Image (cartoon, rainbow, N blue to C red):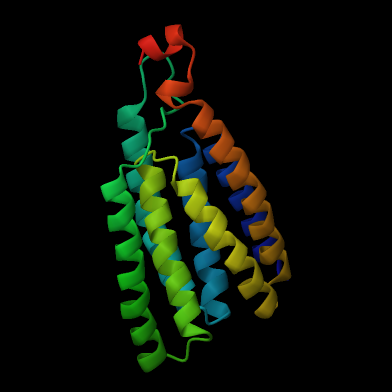
Length: 197
C-alpha cells in the first residue's frame, strides 16, 4: 500500500459517490481518479487496467460533456437517468465479449501482463459500463456490480488490498446508485415531477 494508492482510493470513492447521487462533478473528480490509478496499474503490471484508465480519462471528458449538455435548466448539476433499450443491452454485451477476446489475445501474446485474459475481460466490460453511465442508462450499475465483485478478487490476488477494499465499497455505492437512479426514472416519479421532464 502506497501513499498514491491511499489518495487514489479517496478520490475514486468520492467520484463514485457523486455519480450515485447523479451529480455532474463526478466526472472531473473521476478524471483525477483514473489518472492516479493509471500510474498504480503501470507499476503493478496490470496493463489492461492501465489502458482502461487511459480510456476512462477520455470517457470522463465525454461523460462530463454528455451530462452537462443533458442537464435541465432547473437542475444543472443532476441528470435524468433512463432505461437501456434491449438492443443497446445486446450490443453492449457483445462489444464487451469481443473486446475481451481481442484485448486478451494482445495482452497474452505481446506483453508480460499478469492474468491477461481476466484483466482484459474486466477492462472490456468496464468500458461498456462506463459508456452506459455516460449515456445515463440505469443498467450501468448492474454491470458495475458484476465487474466490481470480480475486481475485488483480482486486487486481493495482486496484493492491492486497499484497492480491493475500495472496489468492495464500489459494490455498495453501485447498489445505492442503482436504487437512486431507478427511483428517478420518469415512470417512478410523482406525476407532477414527471410532467416537467
